[in-house]
Image 1 (cartoon, rainbow, N blue to C red):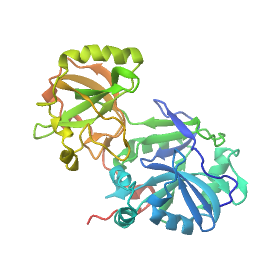
Image 2: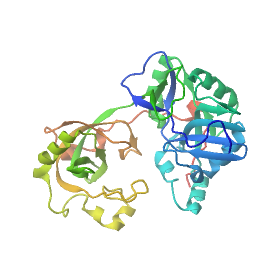
Image 3: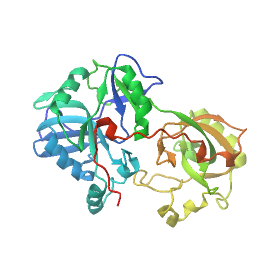
Image 4: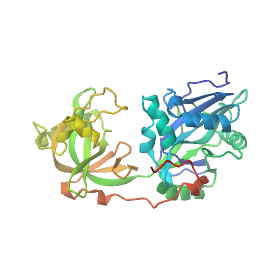
Length: 361
């Protein structure tokens, strides 16, 4: 492979803002794996946000990109999987598997799509120092008439359209809106764009915590919600605290600390077999590797209000929840899934036509 922009490339990033800024280039924020595609003739490589290759996990996309992208190019975009008209992040994470046989089976069962939104190189020219407005025009021409599973991300400079997308597209599993300055060059690993994400609040039960990697202070709070059967389900963590606050939390939560996990709603996490049928706070994963996931059990008697942006399959927070305040006025058993707001459904096909859909077999 011999391109004017060579891997690894770290993608340009976005910083969070509360409102959609004016006078910019706007796109939907896709909920998938960020990927930079390098194509040089028959050679295709998919680079991840960290620079590590994703190529082996998406063989069906390699074939599709080889057929549909310009012969020599570098394209920034998102790998997504669609199911029943909305994005399915769970199905996407399952694709990162060490066994080649499973990867190929899932490539047929849950085929992925690629949504292109930036062009870093074309033929023998690097576009890293070209303004976004010009890069977008070149990308639009390069992908004119492209077919699924490769898609050109819809874009607009009309802030009212962007606001409409922000309201509507969440129902199709999208995260919000990205705003990009029209004159910005492609700045690797810099937060030169803006992301506006949906944020909601929920009252959840604190049922444990993990220590911080630096020592005996709180690293993250383990959060739970009660399901229809009255079982406390682990739904995520809250982790962004100052070091002073981490130490304070240890003292605040000490009266709730349990010497033994026996009797705790999540006591079963210690049993390896339990992880086969449930997502529990001590469960290992291919993302955590050998990371220490031990935790301190607390009597589930304290309620906290947290902010979150998105639920994964309606059962857990996709990203780390943000601590807002303690809720001493709430009873833990009143913290159920019923309080969670569901976005109005919106079909991905309304965005840019039929996508590659996963099998329902």
